[in-house]
Length: 119
Image (cartoon, rainbow, N blue to C red; front, side, top):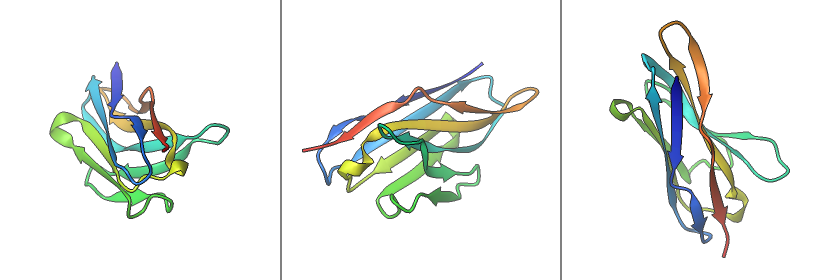
């Protein structure tokens, strides 16, 4: 069994910063892609950022230049540094990881963490 546990969400003023963390634990042989999605009220879940096992990263156009995804493979953890936050960044943020166990490769999701950008 694998779990992804997120932390770091909260309320921040426009222009502020937050750092999200997501730690994977359990039956893990190898972690492939890791990343973050978000879902705002009334909208579909959308990709925010992905980072591969080789640390190549991809971002949604809406967050390029403001958000940075990184990972610590020794800690099985992915991070999302969010700077210059805007009200439109308000959403529930979900981490995900593609994890190779003993017999299969499976995509797992975190429980979600609320990010609210408001004055």
